[in-house]
Image 1: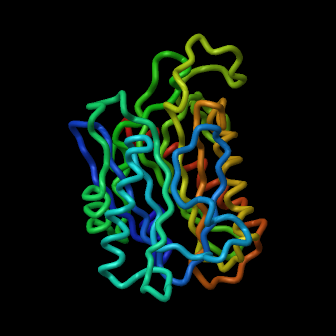
Image 2: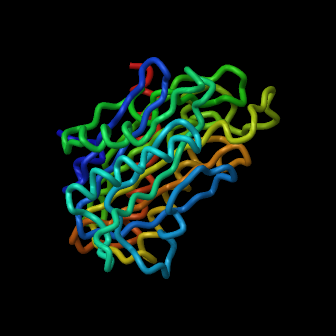
Length: 292
């Protein structure tokens, strides 16, 4: 049984992984029609096209979402995704032709492997071409190839890419997490996964600015407006706050994308709670899959 985000009909995910440079990128390809929004709470984000996802903007749909390593350099991978989408005749219609819409966000992994290794346009194109609706391969893959957590303890743990699906309120919600946090990791029930007390206190070690960031994509088969969908992004960020202590710091760029790509009629608040649980379980998955 598929218990990853690709269980949501129409969602496909592809990866490009550099096992030597310890970086990579992940592309979440979306069905059409869809509605997408995002919320960033970390103070050090690296992102592309996220302003377009705010309420009131002219374009509400996207063709794909890019998650990448390589810090801001990794945003170049979106160019390759755009190129592949253009060849597939996908994009927002303009008088000059279709323009693919590919928002994205990155994690900082430049000091993990080869600092000169980072996803580029060819990497993004390769990730797009590898897309599949099969259950995801989790762990040290794609954008999570070089990720760690609990870095402020001075002895980080290996993390990876996690995913989970929750059904509630007449809809399914899938979450994909690239876990690269400064803080300690806990389950939703408060079980520590990386050590450290429940109340963080004063850390013995503080890594440098912008060297972290956890990225989330939440997708549902329920039909919501962009304003309604924002509640799923909020609850996804709430799950980060519950499971990562601390989260949303000056050293993180924590970003949550939320996607509505179905026709199911569902109660918004219940689906938002499903998003909270799905993100929390995906965080657990990101730790367990890296260890496995």
